[in-house]
Length: 316
Image 1 (cartoon, helix red, strand yellow):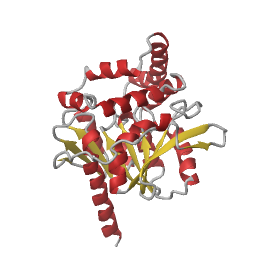
Image 2 (image 1 turned 90 degrees about the vertical axis):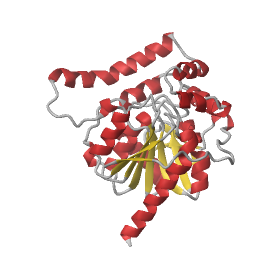
Image 3 (image 1 turned 120 degrees about the horizontal axis):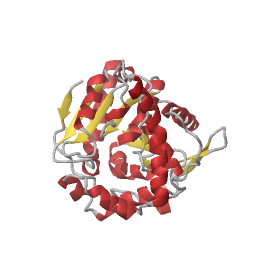
């Protein structure tokens, strides 16, 4: 589908823009049949339309705090889940995104939710796509912030034997390198954010000059490593696996959002997603970068309301 320019960045919500995180304690745990526990928090409004949120690689459920005020104002209930070994979720072995998505569905069923959307930032989109593709009768829309890294797309046929072997080798290599790096060269959250800013556009560096934004990023980074680096290493390895299906298989309405000045996510990757998904649109936010969501979530959630009204009109 086509790309569209947004109508300009909306102003950030001023009423309690980011909730207090209460020493990072999760709202609740869900115990899987295996005995492992998944930690999750809820943001927005408890009476709103439910959305399952998948955090970016190297992040935690706390990342969802950035969307709290807009979700509450516009009537969405965000459920953010720590993946295994991240934040307060127990570590257990996960080999594929689909495996974790099946566990997420057990939690969703326990919460009594029948119809919901999925939302993700960056590499978390690999899980959102798998859930949308595997449960199309339950997932009503997909909201992707900053798209997906292009190396996960599995649309190219006839790849060489060497390429195929490399694709199999990459996830365990990522897992090993992350664990070695954190073991011998550990970062504190402030160091990680300082290093990140070297790669950001001016508009992103300006967004990160807000002390509260920096506080959330630091808390989120620290929370991701609460149990050590094993969970983050495993998660990044899973996030960078090739998709096990074609993007054409994801038929639900999909909105892909990206800031025009984003230097962390490639414009071409977002355009590729939009072009290869049958019901997708790309929205690019002018004068904003990777962290466009700090300012523009009112507009993003407002578009979701428009989508809901269109679905209602079609059903009628």
